[in-house]
Structure formats: structure tokens, C-alpha cells
Image 1 (spheres, rainbow, N blue to C red):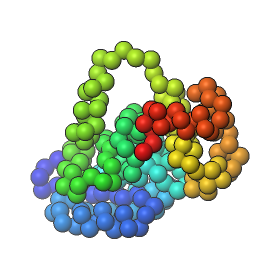
Image 2 (image 1 turned 90 degrees about the vertical axis):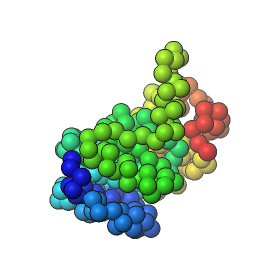
Image 3 (image 1 turned 60 degrees about the vertical axis):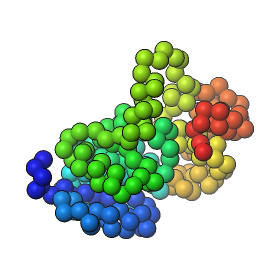
Length: 215
């Protein structure tokens, strides 16, 4: 991409304040414009098609479906689209899952504005972007011969359910936040307990804390 080319960005985040903050940051750049925005996963899938964007800024915790689900769908429709995941979560929780699902990069919302602009330009040019901290974390594990952790066998939704339960949220609260039925969330909980060979939420929380899956 030439230096004069304008990068069209689409923002998908359920918090209006976050969207406005991102637009404010990008308004100060000459080569990046916001081509559209959405407040949930369904609208993101519908509206990004019309925006003609090269980069999708996608919140990993959308109210109606997980950001990784949205990521997989948009990449299926438009494989060349660069998707930059944004999250409140620590990088080592969701970054690898995002990259495996097709994301071009991953940033926490605590990242500096300058890093966001750098990341957008980099993924728009066809490259991947990860922060120096995450790069170091990955480098630390290169060549390690260890058995995969139990939580790595979970689906993206099961993993999300695990972290929410371990954070102290009830099944009812999780169902409401994810726009799912209590029955569906209970099924996710039951499946992840079986996969991880745990008996109850207390053991699950202990596992999450021990493995630093939650703050």
C-alpha cells in the first residue's frame, strides 16, 4: 500500500465511548479514515460489507456473539480483510485464539494511541501485528515440549464461559451478557467441566487463577 493510500477502517465495539475514542484518535491521522461502525456482532457482519474497509477493528467481547465468532464469519466472506482484535483481556488469554482464527493482529484497549495507528497501518499492508510484550511471551515458549493445558481443548465459547464463571459471574448473568439462554450457558459449563476433568465452579475458578486466565 502506498503512503498516499487512505486506509478505510470499520469499528465494531458495543461501547459508544470506546468507538468515539477510537474515532478521535484516528481523526488525527491523514491516511486513515473511519468508514463505518457497529455496536454488536450482527450489525458488524451486515455493515462491514458496505463500508469497503480494508481493516476491521473488532472488540472480542460483543454482546450478541463473541468477537472470534464474528472474526471467523467475516474472514469466510472476505479472506483478504485485515481484522485487528481489541480486548480488555490480557494478551495471553485470547491473542493466540484470535490469531489462529484469522486475525491479523491483537491489541489491548490499554494500548497507546500511537500503537493503534501503527497496528492499523501494519495489518493494512498485509503484515501481522502483535505487541512487543506478546512477541516476547511467544518467544519464551518456542521449543518448549510440554503437554497442552486442559483449557486449550475448549471451544472459543467454552473458554469465554470459563473466564466469566471464574470472574464470579453467575450462569444467569453470563446468559444475559452474551444474549444466550441460561440452558445454553449451562451446557457450555457442563461441557467444559467434563473436558477439564473438574467437578464444580470452585475447582474451575481455582484452575483459572492458578493458570493466570483471569486477573
